[in-house]
Structures are given as structure tokens and as C-alpha cells.
Length: 375
Image 1 (tube, rainbow, N blue to C red):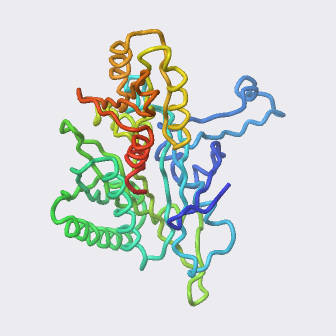
Image 2 (cartoon, rainbow, N blue to C red):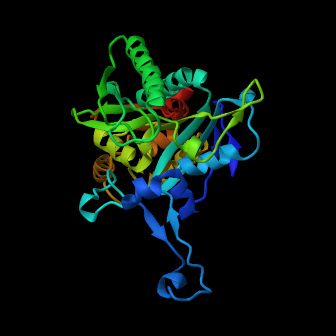
Image 3 (cartoon, rainbow, N blue to C red):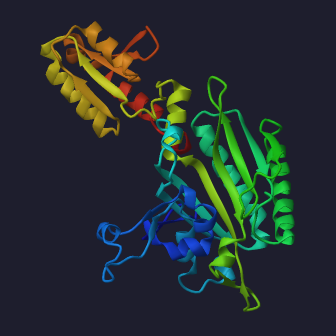
């Protein structure tokens, strides 16, 4: 399945289970099998001697790359189409020892904000810079200001010839210098000698959260291995077949892990645009229940995540409970607010209360709840 995304990415959806032969072709079955889940039909597993049973071995995908190469290969590609950018929020599964599992930070099944760019060698530098700009803009939207970018170079065990590695590392070193210059020195850069993937060098983006801990999240990896292994090519301007450069790109990496990082970074106190529950409308007296329901209906119509609390409890009890739940905005309604068409607003972390008309309150919250990149 595929659909076009804004920003020239094409969203695709690769199969969840793929035949072992594909992972043998990619090299993952040999290099990465200790982290993969192999699967067969339940009947075949229980009846290995049954010749009529389908005894083929499949694998739950630990990554999206081979599937995206197959999608790129569908049809004849021209140099005029390059670069081809395929993106997928792909569910992947990787075997981790039970002792290594840790909440949202280390799981066996997770979602990757994955993308692969197929481009010419001449386009590689610009594509890496384009990806860098996208990654940094996302981190800025989430409030991360301190970060570093490290270039991981060729490991001892690797595929590909030295000439290809030399060329890729030279280009990425130039990109790294450009990243440092464009940031005015605000982004720390460095080299991770020998820490690259077996198929190519990579950038690693490391974030620093509110209490100083560092987290490695985004990556940009150059790959000249998979296109060769799968025979991927495009037709160049001289009508010759030419192998594309493949760039792997992830911004958050594991979405579950990134969510865990955000929870830790904000200590659960999300900005309004990110909070899963944005507003609670709490009543002081039962006579204001109807007005509170009306307020919630208008908030929802404006696109805000709101709910009503009309329980027969004291207002201080309600406010304390929703504050402990880290709800950013609590609107308090009594008979006076119902008669005036107003609301009393309490913000999480503040003892101040603000009274304003319902229309002004909604307009203000809608603006605040708009994600930074859409303002």
C-alpha cells in the first residue's frame, strides 16, 4: 500500500512477515539472526515430518529496509524520478533478552518512523542535509535544544569495498562540518570511530533532556549494500543501469521509546499541543452541569481534547485530582460562570486563576494547542 505525503515522501506499508530467503539476500539472516523472530505455521511447527505441511520459515520483520527496496524495484526507475523517498510508520519486532526489557525504553515490538531515500551519488550530500534539517526541526518542536551529531565510521566487520566507504565517509564528513557551521556551534559534532553499521557510515543524533540525561534517537545511514544485494537500479541519462545510493532515515527511532523520553523530559507535564487530555471542565455545583456540558461540546467542536467532571465532589478535590493527573487546563464552572457565559481557568503548576469569556478562552487555547510547525 502506498500514498503520497507532503514533502515529497511517499508513504508505504511493507508486509509484516517475509520469507526467510529475502532476509538471506539482505544479509540480516546471517548478521542479525540472534535478534530476529523466525515463524512457521503452528501446524508445521507441531508436525515437522508432515511433507504436505508448509515447512517454509518466515521472519517477523526487524526493520523495514528490504521491503522498501522491493517497492523501489517495482517498475522501471529513471534518473528523472530520483530521489525516491519512501516513508513508513512500520511495526517491527526484535528479540531482546528478558533481562534487557525496560518499560517503553526497551521492548520487543515497536513502531519506527522509518524512511529510505534512493538517490544518485550526486544527490547524496543534499539529501543528508535535507534529512538533518527535518530531524532538527522535529526536535525543536518537542522542545529539545541541546543535542549532538556523531558520525560513525566503518567497523572492522563490514560489507562493500574500501573505495565505496571512502567516498561515503568523505561526503558525510563534509555534511557534518556543514551541520556544525549552520548551527553556529550550538550542535556538538564528533566521530565514532568504527561504530558504523556493517553496510555503511551513519549519523547518530543524541538528545539531552531536562535533567541532563542523553538519549540516542535519530539516525541517517548510507547504504550501498542492500541495493547491490537486491539488484536495485535506475536508468541514468545515458540509458545505462546504475545502482542507487540508499539512505536510511529515522527521526524518533522507536516511537514508544521516544514517548518514554518525552514523558521523562516533561515529567508528565506536557505542553497543551502535546497533552493527550487537554482540558477538564469541573463543576462547583450540580446546577452548572448543563452549562459544563455545553462548554465541553464547544471545546470539542474547536478540536480540543476535553471532558466534563460533574461528580458530586468538592471542587478542591476535583482540581487536586486532575492536577495530579497532569491535565494542563482545568475550567471551573459555577452558576455565576453559567449566567455570564464565562469560565474560570486554572493552569497546571500555577495557583493563579483567570476568568474570561468562553469564546476568548477557546480562541486562546486553540492557538496554544496548535503544533509549532502549523502555527
